[in-house]
Amino acid sequence: MTTTTWRLGLAAAASQALVSTAFAAGVTWSTPGTGFWDDASNWPGVALPTDADDVTIDLGTTTAIIRQLADAPASPLSRFTVASLLAKSAVEHSGGSLLVKGDATFEEAFTWSGGVLHVDGSIPSGTWTFAKGIHLTAPSLVGMNAGAMELHGTSILEGGVGILLGNVPVHVAAGATVDIRAGDRLVVQSTLLNDGTIDRTAGTGAFEIFLRGGGNQGVVRNRTGVLTLTNGSDNVVHTGTFAVDAGAELRFLGPQTFVNTISGAGNVTFSQFHDYTVDAASFALDGTVTVENGGKGVWSGDGTIRNLRFSSGTFLPTGHVDVIDRARVDGIGFVSGAVASRTRFLDGLDLQANFIVSTGAVELGGNTVVQGSVGLGIGNGATLTVLPGATLRLANDATAAGTGAIVGPGRFVNQGVVQRDTATGEFRFSVTEVINEGRLALESGSATAVLDFRQTVDGTLAMTLGSVAGPFAIGGDATLAGLLEIGFADGFLPSLGQSFELMTWETRAGEFTLSLVGEAARTGYGYALHYGDHALGLEITALAAPVPEPATWALLASGLGLLALRRRR
Image (cartoon, rainbow, N blue to C red; front, side, top):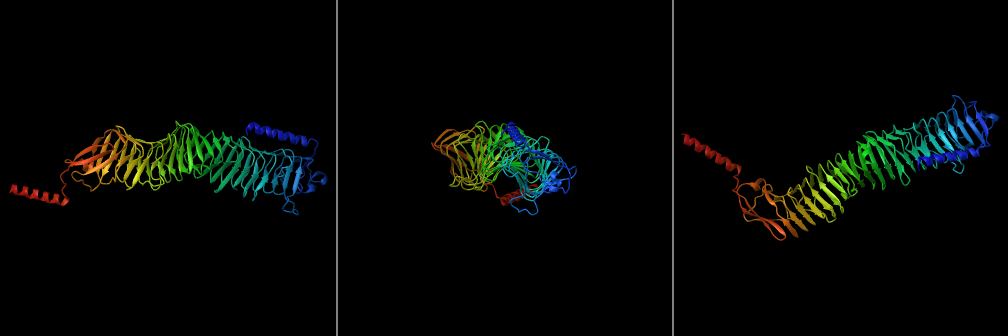
């Protein structure tokens, strides 16, 4: 519901109330007496006002108290019904049920310590205006079920539970404040429109604001605990700002759109199976943003995220987004970006669960480790790139279920270092295309690429003889360029004529340039690369002289020393 429509609705309700009370009598309570509404002696004519009376309360500094009658049953509540109400002095509503068929205006303080306001929805009601706000102190849940509520001034919510408002549109006026200090809920089954400030200043537990439309056009701030904003309608658009302090959390449930700033040192969580659309350029949170339980964070445009956490949630960028600090994946994480989108994880991923790039481009900086049953998925048309200077360490084995692998119909590009150095089984690059422009180090176990493998002139394929369990098996085309780097595992020495099958393929184009490191580069070793129709082999054609053991070096040095001494004599 738009602001204009909402206010037109209030005007219509007010007009109806004026018509219904056009012939009502005016009753003014001006002598404090006992201060209790239900004391007939306080009223003119020694009679309580009725639903035909326009009532004015003008008691100066005395507070008018509305209460449950002492001899009345707990249910139904004592009912006090008037045509309209203007309170020029303070009012405390501590019990019973106050019903106003027209408008109710409270010019001074209104304390809500018990009872209910106009809960009978069958009786029409106008607008209830609280010029200085509401001070909620009721220990149990209080409610209202008809009319509309206008909050001005400062409202303080510190009751034991909170407020339940039925078909009651609520407007927090510009310049007004709702200060949340205690309790656990403010439920508005109609629209809640905030043009002022909603500020949670105290409390350590969770507090929920539930609404069905309206939204934040002012400021919402959480300083402590968890403040949840739940939308029960199709979507709500917030044009105002949100802020969360360090150690606190803002949670959002239900579809919501944010077109202004979300900032602060605290945390923000988007939860459950709904879309949360954020203006990326206005997102200035220093804390962690979490998408969980099916929540979908739609990042519109270009921007930066300080921290990002996946807990079975989806991130949907439409532009270029940089994620600073290591992103954590506690539950399965999805990135489903627009075709031209790019999400760059500058400090890599902390993988505790599977991570899937469904669409768009994802780039990994920093250090990422694939371990345990964790795998990386790449969807059709998606690209996962390891950036220059970044490392992706493959420390697990593929399983029959497909985890422990890089899988999917997409493309994997390495511009940094991809290293397979600990596990002894097989790792699968089960993707359409693997492109190596950096360093791919196969130091243990075995690896396969289900379809095509291409290495550019800037790429290096490093293989460690003595620890690699089998060839790098390419299921489709192999396009070879750049370096083939050969090294020996610690303690391994080949024998003369020994052959190693390094790669297999269906078809091949190009060749490697052989590069040797460590012991394999010692003078005396000879190698021959054999390119067959479907495989690449390496043969040891010559051996280097054995390196003497340390004890042999010591004897030799001692002998040379004695020989030199004899010559001098």
